[in-house]
Image 1 (cartoon, rainbow, N blue to C red):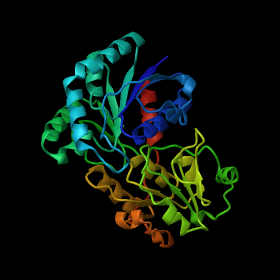
Image 2 (cartoon, one colour):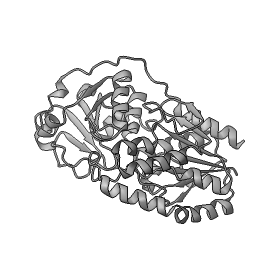
Image 3 (spheres, rainbow, N blue to C red):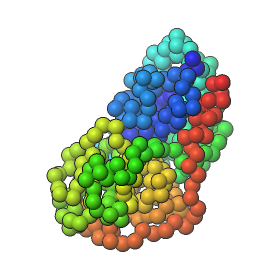
Image 4 (tube, one colour):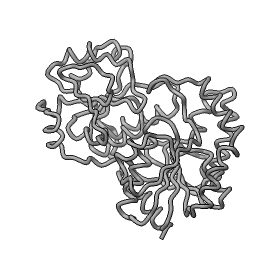
Length: 357
């Protein structure tokens, strides 16, 4: 049985869900492939995409991304300290996985997108492929100071990657020597719009049905009470279990339902900049309404991308958090460019399948 070792960066839910979306496509075409999933992302999240009986889980953390208190607030000091610790303890982090891979008989290492994974692959003499729309060197370098040395180290690691599948909304990713551009990744809806509407008793038309989704870390300062009470004839949906009980707000608490499953009943998605949410909205031709995100280098790529490829609105944060949601009454701005290709899951899965054949 061919074995794929798939490691995911530990930062929010977006990397985990897009890697799992690709892996689910691989499972459909190659049921004989065993997927070893190395991540500390919640298993319930991964199992909402994958067939769990065909996955082996490894609770391994190769990196941290950016430490945050919520989806918009970064802790650079804590992030730097943890990155320095990872740099100083590389061998200690990798040693258990080197032994595991040698004993298990892995055939290919794939990552989204922990830098240390290339060093793991070198230690066990296996190729290392990756997928992503940015490298962590791109995120850290603009922060200057000690982050620059960390970015140099990460770029050196990425230089040992054998093949990168570059996703849309990307930076140049010049640290990677071998690039293959692919289309959008993301989950496919499990249920039809009619089933979702019946399941949650939604009777409001689609143009007044809105999904509020702010990633795995959430966003505590959303002014639900002020904003939603001003629009009693609209229907809002959220995965935020801490949201208040309001007559026009449905809280999605069922394990297994994902944003892509709910998007089918919504005209638009209100979110922060994030690849996975934007990608799934574009795949389903839904409007994207986004808050800006300061100090995170990926955000301008995403903002520019949705302006080119999706019906969209860019919000003013002050107005949004004050509770003025009059943006709901405004039409979405049409894209300036063409639709993006949506073949990311299949393109990457097919390449892995060919290699493992």
